[in-house]
Length: 430
Image (spheres, rainbow, N blue to C red):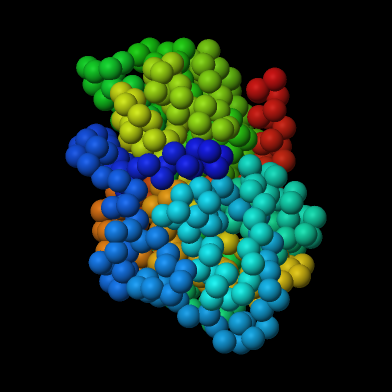
């Protein structure tokens, strides 16, 4: 999943664009049409009650009205090292240099005296490699990286008592397979989103699609103009479709595939190739293709839909009836952190209501802190991104690292580990 800083700068021109994913059979158009042209970055920025009279939620770093709703832990503050070095997805640590209205780094630095040094990670694989160097205090990791980091002893378990924000995290994000081991948490959940089906509304004027069949079966208006996410984790999308359409394979978890199930997913992806015109990693590439009409359907993220619609793209998006893969990111503490106290303070801050709401609006995802949705200006955003809608997430399969030990609980077979997913994807794309 992810962006370049250039792409994220474009997002600042949007409000909380209500291009809602909708329910299983509902598209985004109604909410998007009513808000894209009406709102601005200023009205989008969530405000606390104390800041409700200001034009935006831009942090007042001189000590004004903004209530940051967070107090640094006294013990951690006393031991703060003065800096921290983090690996983060673009848009997860904004300091106002991209857009002055979005800055949650500066107030943190002023409250803690911990300078934040950010290394942007372009992929989960790169983030794992960077963390293995031992040079970073923490990382914002997606589920296809977290278990690798845990298994490699690159990150440490946390004590929730040290983090005042942890209690307010949505329960559905805590102690999940991608951020815990045997009931022990490894990090603080940051935000989440679903991978959606985007489609050109003119090409599908007769009937809007509601199934991933558009991506995998020939005969749709999008044949030859399909856009596919270029990552080994996309194998799970094929497995999810097979789980719904070929129950005889016995797939119950798209990240837990025995050899027969895995081979079926790879065969489906090979069959998909003639339908495909684009494999994308940098989402600005897909955004441009959607705006130009070069892509008629594809797997996408809500933020891409928002940006492209704001630029006039004739598209819509839906979470298909089969469900979807998705992401739930976690801030994790390096087991080798040179600045553990500053990193713990950062993790607590980024999960606190005000800071978490800022990130959610800027990036375009559901916040992880339930209290974020109570802030002025956040109700619509949380509804758009289904922040508290437990039913919406029941058929969203968050990115998880596949292991030889089957994640679905089977013990009579071995499952295909992620290293072999990478090899198979490389072969498929060659």
